[in-house]
Image (cartoon, rainbow, N blue to C red; front, side, top):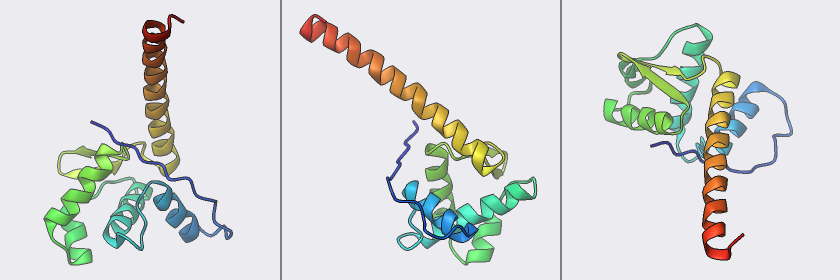
Length: 130
């Protein structure tokens, strides 16, 4: 099951990478002020992706001094949102880069919206004879 949450927010006024990352995370319902660990894990994933690799949960637990259960919880949340994939013991950005990952999530959302629209049409046909 995939759950994608998009929060509509105005784009940041400054165009520095940190502000843009914070804005993207907030749009994906990962507000760094509300859940700093989720943001930090996301930064680990971005850094690993930039270097062409993945992330092991143990690396994050050591760096952030948190439990492995907390890291796994967030990784599972990211996987349900379609942002990351797991290969063996490592987690990767789904598309290999942030832009490709967002493109893939967008394609997922469009497929689901087309399915919803088709179902709505069939329901309307049954209920309203349209």
